[in-house]
Image 1: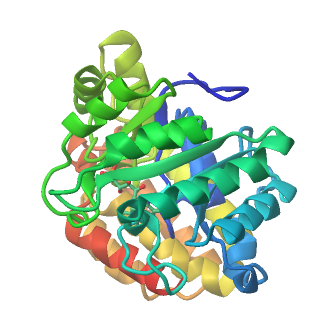
Image 2: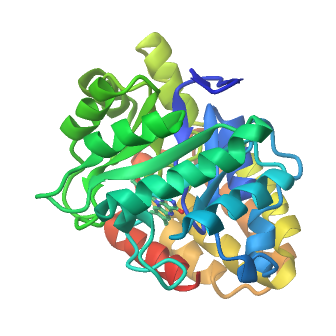
Length: 354
Ligand SMILES: Cc1cc2nc3c(=O)[nH]c(=O)nc-3n(C[C@H](O)[C@H](O)[C@H](O)COP(=O)(O)O)c2cc1C
């Protein structure tokens, strides 16, 4: 599948998740089979660009092409400037966030809230496309099915966005009003796919290879995008890609492999965040990895008390050594995706700190 001039390795993508899909995690997802991974959203507010958080998000050292950066905001000219700012820092694709359910981003209605103001949404897309086009940078967009059940306007917006020059559309099968409640629906995604010529990516509640195949068949979408099910389970991308290609399942990963990739993930994480922030922000990732493993809950509680990176890293190594003494492969139960309650907390905290 292509986005503009970029041909992607496969059609199983990592969804942008603020506070989760940072550079180390994206790199891991790509290594483990994701054909594409979009950055966490970067604010369009210039006064925040110098902040540590935004400058970390705009740092793409060592990332492989195409480097895709998602921008969030409410004003067309600021969004255009944000696109240029990120292009200067290495972005090769700019993704517009109309999918985030938070009430406010940058103190104004943004993300999926933009879907209720079609004229504003379109003016943002036009401004960002105009800014990106001279640089040969394709613009993509991620949205929900609509603002609320009665106003599911994804199809009309998709047509307008395509005419304005958007090169790929990702659709999360929930309205903004739904947040993360209920089940994602795929009929609207199918309708969007039927209405436009650009590639369409289906997103929402895809947690297994079978579900990915079912959603692709039902929507005729060009790709699937996986968010929460990849937390602590980044090998899900190769599992889905393998199943889509062959119809057969890969064995669960070896404990020794997960040990190695988590320890490598942590090294990469510490080098981006440094000692204090590194040890704290790594806890959620470690928690997701060990959550469903035997002894995982107790380990998580103990690990949360560790305050330095070296000790945290060593404790993780010891946990997996002990696990590996009893079993070769990660137990299948550990494949259970994280619950929604946990998701809300992570997401709300993240958005509140924007
Ligand atoms: C913690 C968290 C952070 C998220 N941050 C973003 C974001 O920055 N931009 C965005 O477009 N969507 C964001 N999302 C939405 C996801 O990209 C995705 O649409 C949603 O989780 C549904 O897919 P899933 O069921 O595979 O998780 C976030 C979701 C979560 C759980």
